[in-house]
Amino acid sequence: MSWEDKVRRVVPYVPGEQPKQKGIIKLNTNENPYPPAPEVERLLREIDYSALRLYPDTDAGELTKELAAYYGLKPSQIFVGVGSDDVLSMAFLTFFNSEKPILFPDITYSFYDVWADLYRIPYKLCPLDDSFRINPDDYKQENGGIIFPNPNAPTGVLESVDMVEEILRANPEVVVIVDEAYIDFGGESCLPLLSRYENLLVVQTFSKSRSMAGMRIGFAMGNEKLIQCLNDVKFSFNSYTMNLPAQVLGAQAVRDKVYFAETCGKIIKTREWVKEELKKLGFDFPDSKANFIFAAHRHMSGGVIFEALRERGIYVRHWDKPRIGNYLRITIGTKEEMERLLEALAEIVAE
Ligand SMILES: *Cc1c(COP(=O)(O)O)cnc(C)c1O
Image (cartoon, rainbow, N blue to C red):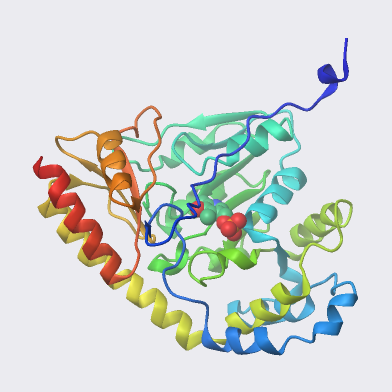
């Protein structure tokens, strides 16, 4: 017997690489290629240094107020956290507390099964169909809760608000979490369903569409009662999660609506162009509404292309897993970065 028998053992989530060398093209973690809004930079210089002596506002009042105004909700309907990973993990801990399994797709964000294991929540995978679509009927069995990203990751496939509503209608007795990390790249949010389904939690992040992955800001929107439950758990865990700069700069990023629309628009435009070019090079992919494309070549294996790109200093994401081993998840960078990627791919697939 030793202390080692008493440890909570987990197989951790593996994030994409953050290589240190300069000059590489980094298309592996869905970061935004554009900097945060210019007003955010100005405010960063103006933050009251001496205020860092104090604990930050536990309610993140200013940030919550800006988000509420932007999405047409009450501040009491917003919960903020240290990236949406923090928000999602709190939501797992708060809402998935049943003997029955929670449900999520077999191909999805690879943090969900990690949190389920960590918190000892039973879960059951619902396989996507051959076109990587969710079958809503899979979510009509007994369960302890439901979560899926929309658009899904790493496939980029967007499901309709009607499909989300079909799942909600069949599940009034559990919390349904829709992870909208990529919704700003052309998808239709299911936020309008909040007024009719008090068991719906919509989670979004500043990491992708708002160019602030390094600042760590995520948020959930839902019925006041759900948000209250989340806050009760959060305040039983760590009251001061949102640091002062994150609160101030996050609020400013929300105010900068024009820049937000502009950068999302540029990424969408680049994505649509890259789709056409990838097709010409012999790649197939499900249609993406995210800031990445999940593509497989008709003749060359995903692992081989992944390594060949890496040797050329271009990082994309590849999983050696059933059903998706041939696919590469390619983040949409700037036009110039994508031109370099496409040149490299043309060379590699011609070999
Ligand atoms: C990136 C991502 C997140 C987490 O992002 P944060 O940086 O923690 O906000 C959550 N869900 C999905 C599906 C993602 O791709």
